[in-house]
Length: 239
Ligand SMILES: [Zn+2]
Image (cartoon, rainbow, N blue to C red):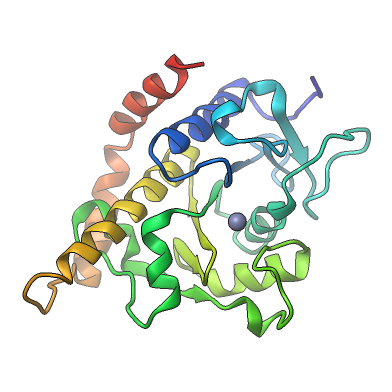
């Protein structure tokens, strides 16, 4: 196992988050979770290229500010690790990032319908869920964020929001902790599903106002430990 600079507690959280998100259907064989190092803030830690349900502590890699492995680590990192590195660079307060191909959000990345907070668990979406159009940066592309310029463009589109949708690809969600990024990933998927259901009923849909979103997000922060404890227990049981 390569020595990594983060605390054991944070390493355990990344492992738990990978497993939780796989169980919750946010990640499948693809997608990844990272956390900013709690000891070397210019660096971040994520698994080597591996299906999230299989991640253990020994699979974690430490990456530098340019999203490259530390010298001597020859393991294969995720191709899309630049998503994480460029968001950490652009947003110093962000402590965790989840990138997924979460199925229910895909329609919102390819149509004019905006993903908006339909209920209190999705309230963090009040800050907006902009859509990243990769063609604006790279007309010839394979939809993947495979280098730093693409990561930088994605981080730019995220702006100050909590979630950015990626046209024809998936989404990336940020948090000020691993539990918060996990919470937001799960509830972005659920909010998208519920919004799609609501469009089949008589409209217009009554979304949360920005003020409700702001207040509700703050309340959810205060109760994050409860779902995290439950998810973590389930996630680590099947090791
Ligand atoms: Zn992806």
